Length: 176
Image 1 (cartoon, rainbow, N blue to C red):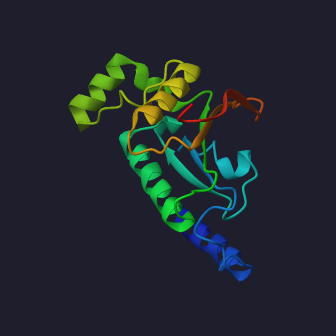
Image 2 (cartoon, rainbow, N blue to C red):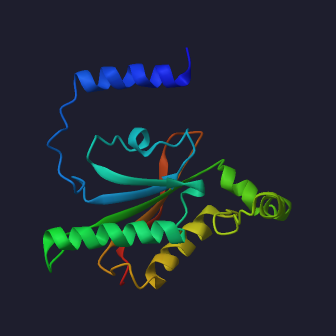
């Protein structure tokens, strides 16, 4: 049986008991999680998320890229439209993990080969030090004029061996 057939069977089982038709557009926890796309690092499992709890944005390394900034800005805009002039609390959680493939992107040879052979620049997502990259991503958010300063950001590292997460940056408003 192909992977697609397995996934379709799983969806049929999911749809049989589906009760989320009335979930609101805004996530119940008013949170956005930026995490790595690694299949071993699913925020729904790691953080016990239910359907509709949070928006999850996944990419290589769980990094704040220009595309992620655009997505967060668009979400913040929608939240403000729905909430009016006084937007409610809005949290952004950055989640990286140990043993990340984006650590390989720090190798200049890998960067060069990807750039030459595919035209792909991975320098923005390369990770040599998770704590430093998380602090850098928060600074990138602070410097983005399209990201409102009232958004509260925090940062964590998920340990692949223990399954636990460690706080690197406690929740703080981007304007602070």
